[in-house]
Amino acid sequence: MDKSIEEKIKKLKKEKNAIILAHYYQVPEIQDIADYVGDSYALAKYAKSTEADIIILAGVKFMAETAKVLNPTKRVFIPDMNAGCSLVDAAPVEEFKNWINIFHNPFVVTYINSSIEIKMLSDVIVTSSNAVKIVSKIPEDKTILFAPDKNLGNYVMQKTNRNMQIWDGHCYVHDQLIAEQIINLKKQYVDAPVIAHPECQPTILAISDFIGSTSALLDYVKNTNFDKYIIATETGILHQMKKIKPDAKFIIVPANETCSCNDCMFMKLNTLEKIYDNLLLENNEILLTDEQINKAKIPIMRMMEMAEN
Ligand code: 13P
Ligand code: SF4
Image 1 (tube, rainbow, N blue to C red):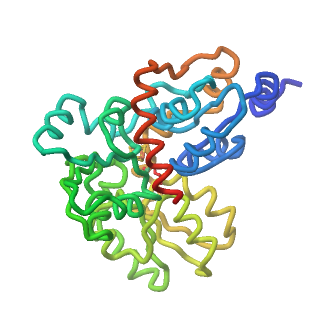
Image 2: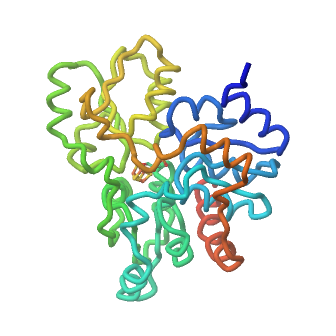
């Protein structure tokens, strides 16, 4: 009998000393075959310390690039090279350079959802799990620029009470969710807490009971005892939530069973077949120049120092 794709992947993974790191927005079958599933910060940390020869980053391209920067002697592959991110597209390099040049000696804080070129121009990188902590540590006399996600930027500004200049970018998945959808759901599910990713609009965050990165949202579900949760983020997260609480009901906003409106089209490009091809053909390798690695590593490592201490 023919081997299943999962068995073939496992065999090749072992032969080539490879690991699969998957983001929570991947389809369930990819999450289930991964050696590690995490949010963007946890994936970066895992990639930095792995001793595997090959890293398959089942997520989007900026995540694979970050893995390469942090562990450049390893070969990093992505299942689909077109797995981009609307936040990366929102900050073209030349426009970004011009923006920075408007300010005198600014401190540039950049979300990890950004291109390698933008990272090279930044002072520190942040993720949704550590942005508040990192921004609150920046010296008071600095002019802070925050890019490219305006919703995360406004949330961080509110939490830290720091004034920041914010780039006008957004995630197309989170930004399309609207508060009215949640208000309507709350009428139906009165006792269900609303939990949201900080890439959502301020009007959603204002009516949320908990705001956090994908891992933080999962921890919230783990550590609370509700039987229903209203979730404002990408659908992939439901797979782990259902594993944690199989009997709970997870209502994903906009709660329309017939549309896949909050499936990230970039994350969902990845498939088991493409992962198998990565392992077999060694295609879709992330290749960065020494200059890109050396320059982008500085703000990424600064993130790690500031987030961990
Ligand atoms: P996390 O940092 O929460 O994993 O978010 C990454 C992302 O792309 C959210 O849309
Ligand atoms: Fe980018 Fe949004 Fe997709 Fe996350 S969900 S990868 S921020 S487009």
